[in-house]
Amino acid sequence: MDVVQWARRLIDIPSVSGSEIAVAEYLAGRLSVEGFRVERQELGGGLANIFASAGGPPEVVLCSHLDTVSPFFPSREDGEILYGRGACDAKGAMAAMVNAGLELRANHFDRFAFLFVAGEETDSRGAKAAAAVNRGSRFLIIGEPTANKLAVAHKGILLLKVKTRGSAAHSAFPHLGDSAVNRLIDVLVSIREIRWESDPDLGESSVNIGRIEGGTGANVIAAEASARIMVRCAVPAARVLDRVLEAVGDRASCEILSKTDPFRFGVRPGYGTTVSPFGSDAPHLFGYGETFMLGPGNPEYAHTEAEKISKSDLFAAVDIYCRLVRELAA
Image 1 (cartoon, helix red, strand yellow):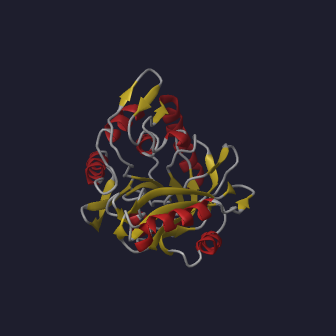
Image 2 (cartoon, helix red, strand yellow):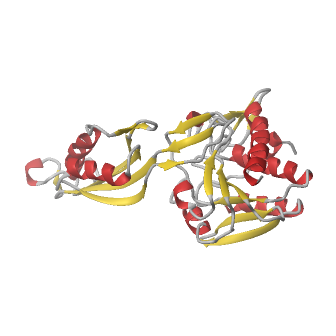
Image 3 (cartoon, rainbow, N blue to C red):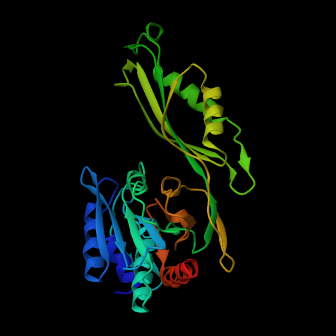
């Protein structure tokens, strides 16, 4: 199969976070047939990572994630574009990595391995487990959509659950209750008004109020309300958290669900560079050596209903991965 066929096959196996075992098993089976030494790292809950060595010392590890956001939708293509969930985030990168690996082995180069991990879109569970296993590699290449450029850096993440409490009452008697929803709205307005710090490379931090919950019905004053917010951190996450806590004060509780600092990647001459506003598994994959991030696709199409990738990007990525692996292992 060429890289487009590989990408279509991977896209057409649903792997929304929490249900990515089928695509893991498919990759394990195909890579075994191709002569790779395949290991499964069980994560519990029906999830697993896949590590596949080409045979020699794995000086360079090519890594991407198995899961996608929801909802799943299958692949389709026209003359120039491949569509489907995961096309650019990140099954296109996986397909290009596999094709590059097959080409490298066909040319008698085997000092590399693949690492495909679960849970990147949620809690990086797979990456955290993979970091506990020392593979002896010197370099790690993470496949994320960077338009086939080496990422100089990406932002960190601060994921919070903000919760307010009030007291319930009949909505006809608002003076008898205390709306937790109203309290939450006030807190979220304050968070949105924060003037975030910026970084010369990464620009400003940014906040997204992703999910709001509260109350039991329109005729009941809400006793509890909560929101999940994500700040993309251009500066250390602890400094971002300080700004949030200052804005919230004692009006709500803030539970930290995930926190990573901005991450700086390796760069090399002869490659285009970019800065990524999104995060990746990189902060959790310590111990694999100097880390690079590069992959096909425009990240602006990731997580959208129009997710797509150009076929030319996929073919170019195969050549770039081959070149980068050889240079790093030289």
